[in-house]
Length: 111
Length: 111
DNA sequence: CTTACATATGAATATATATTCATATGTTGA
DNA sequence: TCAACATATGAATATATATTCATATGTAAG
Image (cartoon, rainbow over all chains, first blue to last red; front, side, top):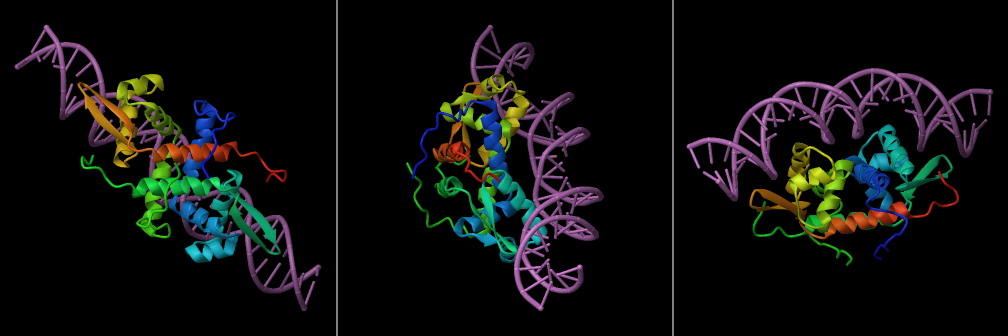
């Protein structure tokens, strides 16, 4: 599903650019990007994220706080644990497009 | 146009994640994102970018070097000037998807 | 060859931020 | 209430990096 043009989001607006940059910056850390990728598959608890990525629960929690604040992920408590998952499908699209960019064959000229 | 799945780019690969994160990190700086946005419209010279964004040519050049190395932009010399433009359309898609994410209405629950 | 212009580069620095560690908060069951 | 577990938070720190300034490289015209 392709994103529809959005009248309310002005790409030439100062605020919008900063808002977009904030999101890209969040995805720009490998550890955080791995966390995002894991959460895209299915809701997963903080402890399980930490275990699967061999990170400290504390570090994972710090990153999750940022991702939740930016509305990339959302957390849902189930008993003692809190399961994190993607808030919507756009981030997945963003990543897919970037994968396509990385997969683009190099042209003859090079740099 | 939606990106096609790419067999050669493995999302679970360590290298791929770092490669993706590098690109997102580049787009995560507001100044650099503005430079990218300007270059998406049409090829534009370093000096003109600097003028339109009221930045020093030196700073713009530093950013352009990174963006060119990451194959986000490409530079083409025309006389004394060098015109920069998007290397392919994927970055535009990435940004469009992120705009859609930003434009997503908040749910009732909030945080 | 010089001069003027356009862009690039390197060093220095101030700021941002990822990670760690210690501790706190919240939840469940005994 | 207490103990055990899960997650969150705050401070401290090491590292990364955006920006500036000075200088270098490259190009076209006289």
